[in-house]
Amino acid sequence: MFMVTEQVLAGQKILITRPLKQSKILAILIENAGGEAIVLPVIDIEAVDPALWNQQPLNVYDWLIFVSRNAVDCFVAGWQHPLPEALQLAAVGNGTAAAMRAQGLKVDLQPARATGSEGLLAMEAMQQIANQQVLIVRGVGGRELLADTLAARGASISYMEVYRRALAAPDTSALATALTADKVICTSVAGVNNLYQLFGPDMAILIKKPLVVLSERIKQHALALGFERVFVTADADDKAILQRLTEMDG
Image (cartoon, rainbow, N blue to C red):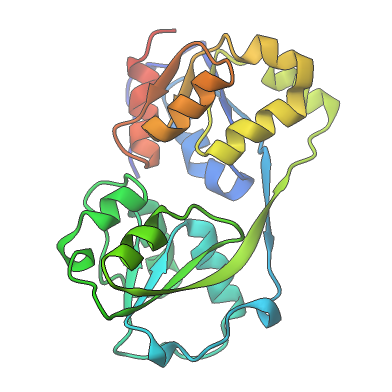
């Protein structure tokens, strides 16, 4: 595990808004760096009944692409059949690939840097994709960039939507504690939107705090909603988030 030996976040309270399961390692890294992690999930992950999935046999596909750790975990929990040996499995980033390996799945393709769909799309294997059958495992109503780009390159795209995102319901005490944070981490557009729904008028307090996000797309969305100082990580993994926290202005 990545370790921090210096107390570079000493005295700082860091608000983590990721779903609970995805917050654990990041919270440990923050604590190891001397900070206090305030974990307030703003998104709940709810598994979709496998009976509602696209249950077409997987041997008709060339690629199975997982877009998140939640996609991996929900797929493995609900899929009861062996995977075809010829099926190639891809991950959009390091966290997704780690979840695949933890679940006993092979990883045939992953980008060197975890930059979301863009990183996977830049890889050579995703350039020569014409006439191949691709199944994307994701949440309900996920981002369309991956599918649209691969379809434009000649691939045939299908979805398997294995989870849905719901607005979390923290109590008033947890919300009050979150407002004491010095810095905020938000890792998706949906997370930014949910912050506004949960905090209402109190967002006037949060938007003045430095915000760490994973992409320029999320940054522009947060700025449009009123955040004043938004910092983008160099990568999407926990180490890159911690690095940005230590480098940014308070």
